[in-house]
Image 1 (spheres, rainbow, N blue to C red):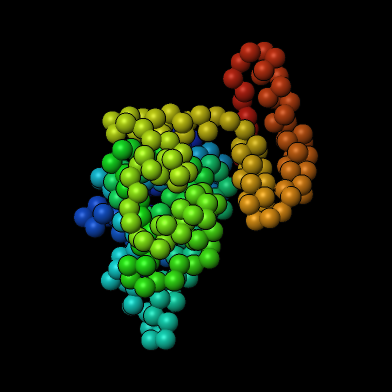
Image 2: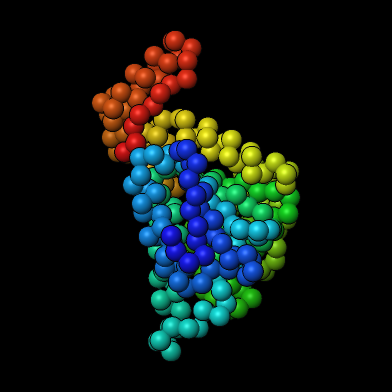
Length: 259
């Protein structure tokens, strides 16, 4: 669909692959700019109920391609365009209306952490290493990227990562909350796929409401308006009635809401 970004479909699960393995899947300016356009049709497609984001080969994403950092036309702010597209890409992934799971192997550095943190959940194997490296090149990390990290790992680990640029191994990332699960290397892909299929089988309405309520709560709101609106929707869409009927009849529910 775009240079170095591939999308595959298997049933109700879409897999977005950052496909530049010769550069450890480092994101070019063009790739950041293309990502919202790749995500938009998947977000709108009712057949897509879950999204897996991963990298080709042994790495997830080694960050932004450093050759693009000073490539903008404005000498006063040569990163302006790259920063704009980077933030738009993160927002598109963060606001994707269906559950998103980052499947992480190997390097997950800088912009790779931004992509992973913009997903709802993160599964990694023991080869994964994580780092946020603006202090190595003199970049001021944006508030939205800082907040995404802060929401996952808290202020102390956020400062540790941003102050030092040092890498965390998978076990430490799990302990600090940067990842949700660490799975054996040969089991990562089948386990992520199994879990994505589980997500695809659940109520999309419940998942959409959860995303909005959690976002509102972490932004300092009380979540009440979103929860009330989605509660009324679950009645009118028949999701609650189907869930209750399926439980009573001891069968899997057949949820049909797609937004």
